[in-house]
Length: 169
Length: 122
Length: 94
Image (cartoon, rainbow over all chains, first blue to last red; front, side, top):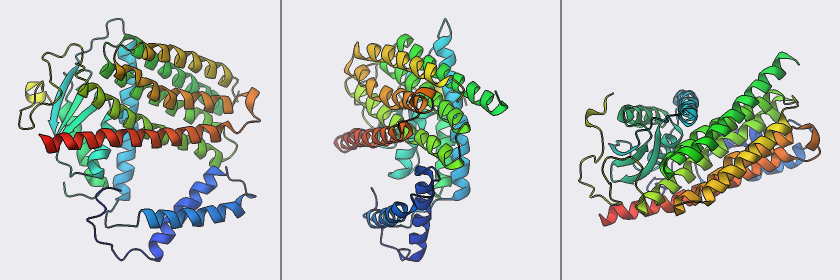
């Protein structure tokens, strides 16, 4: 949606993009119909329309997504968000909550656009951090406990996002 | 009760416990930023566990995946809304409780880290 | 069906109520915005549980939960885009 205008249209508009998106929407329909066989008539029409709309609205660009990077990010995210929930739950139930809240600013290196949006939103669900705002190349965050290594965690998330989007680190 | 049902029940109970933790955090935490931590992290884990517990009982894989599909959508919603709330709170000049020094809503961009602990023990 | 679904749905509903009262009391406008988060997570959790309880199997509540989650995601992203753009303006002004 953003940063799309400065990209030149690439030649990957053809059959490959159509098949990839089509497969994705077919799988989605299978899930939405809960595997029922009697709905494939409407399903075929829906899949075709969805594929056409998606190719028209978001044509496949040069932006790449590494499959291994995506799996790695998903696993990291699942484990860390579980840890985040456990940490905050433990503090909520403890008689003395032992919080050391603070606003911290951390420099970030990811380029503007999708990568940054993903970083800011991912950090909201990871242990101890809530994004408050971006100011230039610095991210302002609220942390529940400023004794924890927040900057190191941000750098780790940045590295994982860069690997997933195949950005130069 | 089959082992699968027992596992499902365990996940559902754990999920409900995290929802309770989110509510307790919401009631106890000192300011809006800390309450955001409670709601975004604890409630989302609660929903994930409940979705997983229900998906285990689904009649077929597609129906199970459909229940699990709800979770990432809610994650997107929570992350985005939480950023919007935190940013708005900062704009309104709301200070985090217990922060050592006030951070004005619009510090100059060339400023060094304000309340960043020195070295940020990694 | 473990028989836990309906009681847990009720439990989440009580949670939602307590949290909404807390959010409505503020004291700041930002606190009241927390209600938007609560409907996304707790509301969807209640619907999912009800969909699988013995009492309410006739209604397609999983679809309702899915649509509510989808709407919450779209509304949340629209909401955050405004905040994001405001942040961008700050950069330009500073």
